[in-house]
Image (tube, rainbow over all chains, first blue to last red):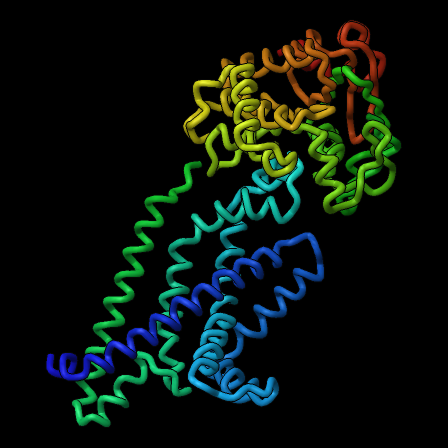
Length: 218
Length: 241
């Protein structure tokens, strides 16, 4: 327990780092992923093409490479100085843009579970494509994809540790800092594991709550 | 509403062959014919849920636009009732009816709800306004679907086999609503197998087979004195059942 109580400052900072990456990256992924998922079923061929290209390139790139691009390739291109705030923003973008591809595919599979008649009826009362998506299709699609969507977010939560390799403080980097302070690294890793298990259990609990509340009656 | 020389192909299959049909204001046209004859396709083509290859469709003189916002606006003028109801599963009955008026016609929520309640009462499901579609019977769902279409104040109502998915005892409650609409002067195109409705409410019967309009006449004329062999054959099969 000493490893926690003696280093509360460090643990606090690291957990905040992880949660920031998770929530900010997750929000970006959810918004971007929903837009891309809708693009992939849109009647406009260009939108479908752009959506498919984005998913197929970014999803097939290892996350570490995406991080390399954001941490090392992008800043010189944009003339950015790597201050703490800039670094963490870039890390959030890397995680968000990467995870958005998984969100997009999950949403698209959800859209495919909504019967075609729902969209036809919505078009028949004069809604535009965007309105059909917003008011009729996506609300039903979201409900049917809560379990796989949570898996995407659990993966995101764990992927935040990749940022540790790019000097962003989070639970993935806590071991290195603690070892500098002379703590047992193995114990540190066990504690990090325990915290991740606890966080994931929280997400699973959120999933069950959403599932109960948004059950689709058919 | 004028359907002018419309042709439609599904790949090799020729679904509509040179179909022309004019429906006047206040007229009730019933389209009947065997399965696969293109009745539903015609119905779905009129509000462009299906595209067509050549020809034109005009409503009040306005050509049906290709896509986008203009098409959406025009669809608002054409009410559609589906065989499988297609009520929005995640919305209450009331929200199903008010979605179009609020989002397309930009009515206030209060106005739209007031109008929706009147319509729901008119089709006899006013009590069910706060329920979800899945909690209603098929007949009730279809009547809500009719109210949802009426809420847009359409110029013409299309019915695509509205009673084909219903239990026999529910068919009449839906047909009664439709007969009421017809008597109130609504312009209607009804694809149906309900010959009783055709006799009672139709101004004109259109008989389709193999993607073509084979015969058009008054219900009286059609049921007692069909001209084409195809229609005679179809009618003889109905009567023997």
